[in-house]
Each structure stands twice: as structure tokens, then as C-alpha cells.
Length: 236
Image (cartoon, rainbow, N blue to C red):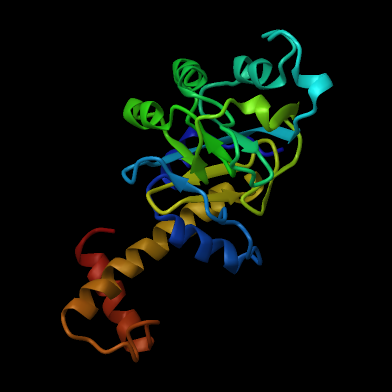
């Protein structure tokens, strides 16, 4: 597992998830954006390392027992999270019950977690959103988790929003959604995304100025030279 630095995480938080998916496509990865997983607040952004939790369907002999914080794998996992981790919950896309609520979100925030993501639902969603803790989900549902879900394993490969997530992968979220970056590509993707965002800033400026798509998007040789001069003048 590659060790992704905080500096790289900070760099990945700047470009849009759209830019990041384009860069990842250039590395041959076409399934990196979580399907139907959206932020509770549109101004949300985050970047952190995946800490995974896998739910399986609830079964009465498993869930009809007293709550035990020392054996419940969701709570055990949360207490193990490190600053900069993002809890990624595989809920099998089932939104019939929340996967967690505001108290667990508050605990993660206090531990320095970077956010939480699920392809299921949250309960207490308005409170989680109001707290400012970055949270992404497929839906909202006030039912408690164990009416539908059972927390089975932590720190194993999971599926979330139709995307494979491994512990330590980089999870980046913005107002559009969440993208998964394999940890060994994180630094390279950060550098390429910065370059692409800069180029798209130039292209957008040209389009607003009346330039046609042909020769501008993508840049032809002449526009590429213009871009290099534009960048030089701005010291970028």
C-alpha cells in the first residue's frame, strides 16, 4: 500500500471530480465515480484515505442482541479511524435504513476523519449536514441500521456505488459526488489534474471570448502556444 501524504491529499481536494475522472480515464480506469452517491450539502469537499466497512443483510439471530460497542464492527472501526480517513460504507445500494446517524458522525469528526461515504442512506441527515462534516449518501432514511444492515467487516475491499474500494485508496468528494483514486496513482493524478484544470481555465476563457470549439477544445498547436504564453505571463 502506497503512503499518500497530506500534501497530496490537499492537492487532490482542489480539482473537480470531473477533472479527476478524466485523468483516471487516461490511466485506463473508467469506473471510478460512485453512482448515485451525492453530498448532503452542495458545498461539501473532502479528500482522505479509505477506511472501509462492509454491511451484509441483517438477520435476526445476529441483530436481536444487546448493543456492544466492543464487538459491533461499525463502532469498533470508527474508534480505529485516524485523522484524514474517510469511512466508506458498502451498503449494497440498499436505502431502506440508515447506515449511521449524527452521533457516530460527530465521533468521527472529533477523531479528525475527513468524511463518510455510503451507497446506502443516513438517518439524522439534516443534523449531519448542519454539522459541516463531509457526508455523501444515496438517500436519507430514519430507520436504524440494523433493521436492514449488519456490520460484517472492516478494512476489506468493498463495493460502493458500483466502484471497487480498497483500504487506503484516496477518496475525493466535491459538490458533484465522489471519485476513488488507487493509492499508488494519487501523486501522479494530483499533478496531472492541476495541469488539466489550468488548461481548462484557459479554454473556458477563450470560449467566453467567442472562440469556436474547433481548435480550442481540444487545443490545436496554435492554441497550445497561446496557452503556454498565457501561463508564462501568469507565472503558472
